[in-house]
View 1 (cartoon, rainbow, N blue to C red):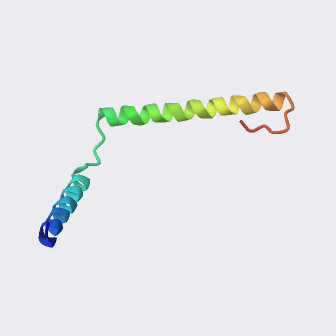
View 2: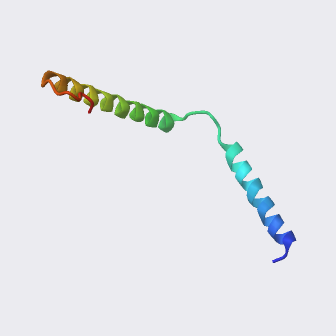
View 3: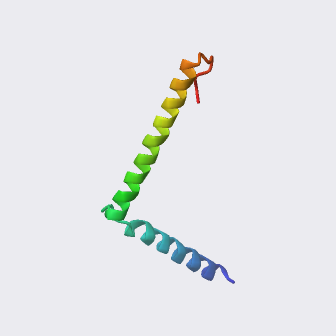
Length: 67
């Protein structure tokens, strides 16, 4: 292939990538909101488990209370 076709392919690739990035809108639909809610619930549960672990270690007088 010559330089022109390589350059043309690269230009088309970049144009498609830019279109793909700009085509995304910021309106969150119901599934996006549900996903965020699930992520938040999982984070909250992980924090609660870690807090419970730390409390249990403190009650057992363990030197390193990190979980």
